[in-house]
Structure formats: C-alpha cells, structure tokens
Image (cartoon, rainbow, N blue to C red):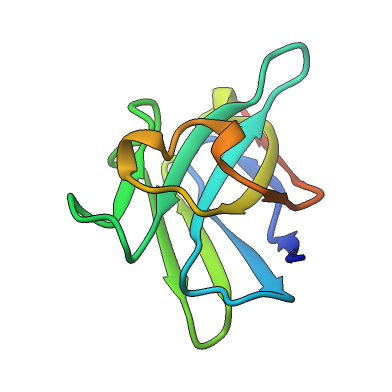
Length: 128
C-alpha cells in the first residue's frame, strides 16, 4: 500500500502561482511513476503531468494545456512530488489529485488506469 497526501491548493488570481505537494508513504517511492490529474465540476478527470526516473524517453510528460506553465518535480529523499503552477488561468480551476503507479513509459503516463494509488485531492481555484 502507498498513501498519498496532497497539499498546497487554494484560491489565487489569474496570472498567479501555486505549488502543490504530494507526500507519499508506505512503499518504495523512487521506483513509481508519479502523476498529477485534475477534475473540474461536471468534467472527467484529466491528465496534467507525470514524472518517472525509469522512462527512457525523458522523465517528464505534460498535457498540452499546461505545457510551459506547469513544472512537475520529485524529491526521492523526501518521497514527495511537486507541481509548480505558474500563469494560472480560471480554466485551471479543479480538484488536483496525485497518483502513483508502475507506469512503464511516458506514453502511458496520461492514463488514469495506469496508476494504482491516489490521494484525496486538493482544491485549486483561480479567479478572473
């Protein structure tokens, strides 16, 4: 089992920044791919970003909608993954979820079913 706890959400004005954190416990963290997903009211959960030290084609993968604005990183010593969000837009408003799983490559990193463990989510609200 792995437990994931997100933090860092909140209310911010458009153009502002937030940094989300996801602390993991219970299993070997470094070997797992870590992903961030989000879900807005009335919409399906969507991929945001993912990172893995085992992917040969590059360790990070982003949704087109956040590329250039969001940065995913991880600190294996702290078993924590981060999502730095800059230039936030109202359409970024959602509950953000952290996920962990044995995702084999970056191309699979955007699929929610590739992840075995999920956090409870943290709300991000961007006002216009």
